Amino acid sequence: MEIFRNNLWATLASGIDNTQVTLPLTTGHGLRFGTINADEKLRIVLLNSSDNVAEIMYATGVTGDTLDIVRGQDGTSGVAHLAGARIEARNGKSTMESLMQSTDLQSAAETYLGSVVGVDAITASATPALTAQAVVGSLWKLPAAGANTGAATLNIDGQGAVAIVRPDGAALKAKDIPSANYPCLLEKRASDFVLVNPANFIKQDVDALVSQTHTGFTTTGTEPAYVLTPTMPLTAYAAGQRYRIKAHATSTSAPTLNVSGLGAKSVKRYDVVGAKVAGSMLINQLMDVEYDGTDFVVLTQLPDPSGRLIRYTEILASDPAWATHAETKRLVVCVVASGGGGAPLVQYKEALGGQAGEVAWGETTTIAATYNAVIGAAVGAGVDGQASSFGVVASAVGGKKGLSIGGPSIVMDGLNHPGQTGVNGRGGGGDGAAYGQAGVILVWEYS
Image 1: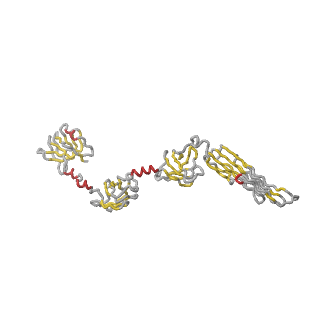
Image 2 (image 1 turned 90 degrees about the vertical axis):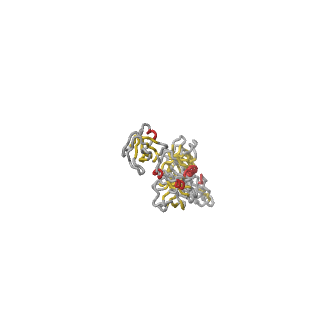
Image 3 (image 1 turned 90 degrees about the horizontal axis):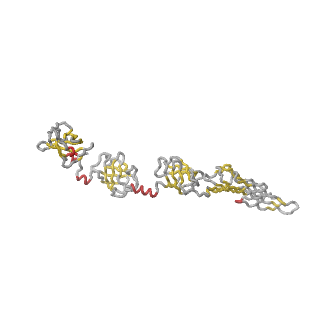
């Protein structure tokens, strides 16, 4: 890089020949040159005894009162110089030609593009026209034809469409070029043009931050294996990553969350003592979750120590391994046995209905993962009802069968009576045509 000095002159301390590449300066004159860095050069001239230019040189460094030089510049040749010869810093023809002429500086004809057409697939013309693709590092300015709608390209003088990207290398977003005549400043890189001044580069990211575009999402997948697909995908899990999510379905067992296909992580929550336990998700539930390095933890207040109802279930069929909810801390159970069958209808006898199945209640805070739920089956006429039970928590005896009363000495047509009504309608049969109804188990689970 060429540098310049004002009113700089010095003299030779001793003579030099026509090949010497250092100049010995009069004592103290080296300070006049200041610092000349390794990538800099200063144009100097040596005058003869008539004060005419005898040789043009470039000074490339200074150490004390010694100059490092490059000889014979701008058409001159190295010649011998006598002690006391005058040295001056002067601009010359090569210096001025290396600078842009004032008319070019005003019009920027070398970089200004005209005949601009298109908002996404942009074409333009340079003056003079390019005969090859723009060189890397060149700057170009064009007045936009209109607002872009998304990713864009630029084709100058038919040399091929090249992608226009944001300063971070991402494709343009809608209205990065906001309107017609917007002054686009572009820098050519190896494989693209960088739009140095995108209008919405900062605003769009601020808007996304305010609206939580990159942090708030609805889950997908098949519960309990929930899936999250952020608009800015994760490349790896790291402690502290946080999302605001809306559950698309209710979990029936301990849920997991898989973000950006990086693998399922357990969803946890804190219990009443602050320990992590399996979480749960309800359809349309809004929650904040944060990855702690092992699990995604639901960031909610600690649950009420008195407990809350997690799930209510009616068990209608026997299940030898009925599973409790992962958060259950207390069970309340109502067990109903099946009703007894009604007495057969016999002429001259009165048929009594069967009794309702027994009802038994149970409660426990010692929670097992599974329980053997036994449902008393429906029975036929004249048969005692069957017992129902829920593990060791509660059990109930089946209702008694209906009886026939009366005999040949009593002249009457066969009569029947309705069976007893039990819990949830699980009563005994009314007569030979009505079976004793099956039992049921009702379960309330609390945290």
